[in-house]
Image 1 (cartoon, helix red, strand yellow):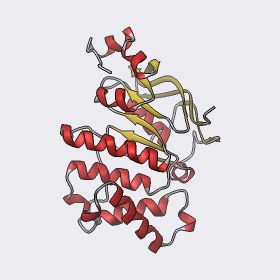
Image 2 (cartoon, helix red, strand yellow):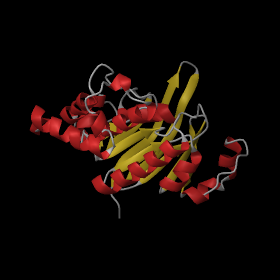
Image 3 (cartoon, rainbow, N blue to C red):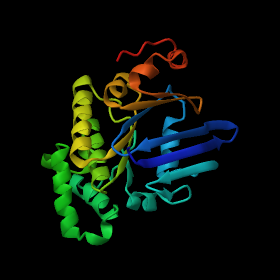
Length: 247
């Protein structure tokens, strides 16, 4: 039986009078790709921010790799093997593409064993994997949206993660770029053996890529299960205004 990697228990988060995450619980097991979906405003990114430590929880518990991380700062979660990307890429714009990935290599869970030379060599490796090696000496601010998303992925990989939180990787990409991004993530998952929790607004992507899907609506979990099963759930169909999800 697969080992528990991430466990979220009865987590709440409010902003003023708005409850963004309302008593959400779920578990992610090693080796899975779990999709997190829901309409705009469902609380998906807020939930990932709580898991990564970008936002504090109001109540509830978050455990990762057997450790209670509920009140740990993001950098300590990163050292445990938890990495993320952002829907709106957050590079160091004035640094070279390679230097952005070096930062990831120096901040990950094996940082005490890495010299700057080792981190630089690793950065080149990850840039090659995501197809950005030829852009290694270009500033991040000069990259396209697709390239920035690949840079986010390379930087996350450089931290040697056990789990990567992906926040709308294909948002804003054209169909060819989106298809290439999905194929790359699947190759990375197989090659590195990482577990993936993936927010995506393009439903067809999650329906094909995920082993299991969790659906949020107004901050609450309304469905969880295999993609084909979730796609037929009446609550899910209603949440997407009657839009059928083809799987």
